Length: 273
Ligand SMILES: Nc1ncnc2c1ncn2[C@@H]1O[C@H](COP(=O)(O)OP(=O)(O)OP(=O)(O)O)[C@@H](O)[C@H]1O
Image (cartoon, rainbow, N blue to C red; front, top):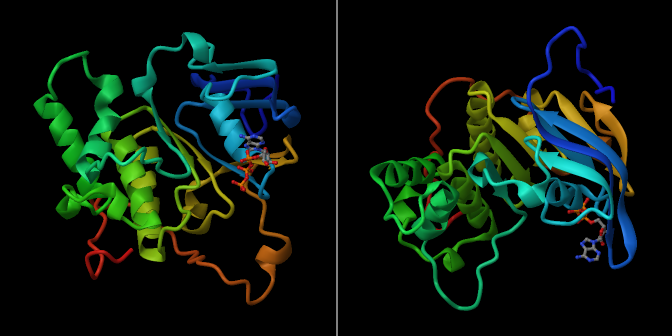
């Protein structure tokens, strides 16, 4: 299978995700149809497309969270059902599901990102605690670590989910709309964080409607329409409503700073987003 944009002269890096002929049905309706996607170590790939085009379904299928009804998919060369190295993957879902009334603090949710790395029944090590602390600082929530997550705004909860993934120090990040509901400042900080991860050689797959401050980082976009890959290559310029004058969205085309610590500046007021 040829891979768009890949120089055949350069030895291929390890495939993190490899889906071939992927088909997924939800409620008896085909949502992914014949999807071929290979994502290699060190790539930063945006999964794009209109609402309902199948982006979330694709990343969930790549992670084995949704079974395929046709085709195959592998994670680091292994079918999801047999994959064991879950610490290598950090997944940031679209929203935090805080189940049934049990309050969790921000630190507890972030610390849960270490579970796949911890040996069973061992207390958290100094390395675990340090990774959790670093992740909290990175997303600017260190001073609120004891607060219940239920009390946070949607954008702040998104940052907790990002911190949970960072705490696991995975090789690959899969982020489903990490910018959704996140204010412009925090978006820029997230872009700086992702830039550092890319420079460290991490693999990043992210679902996005528009790239915003991530634009300079993304060299490959896989675009879905109605469950089919309609583009796989450099991001295409915005078309349609997005490109119209007066289209109202945050799109500061300035590249994020390439240096500096992975620190999310504290917001102006506690409780603000
Ligand atoms: N659990 C489900 N059961 C039945 N249909 C579903 C389910 N989840 C998603 N779908 C349908 O599958 C299609 C693709 O959904 P998906 O969430 O993957 O799209 P998306 O591109 O991520 O959309 P959005 O941009 O709105 O997040 C949609 O038509 C949706 O209605």
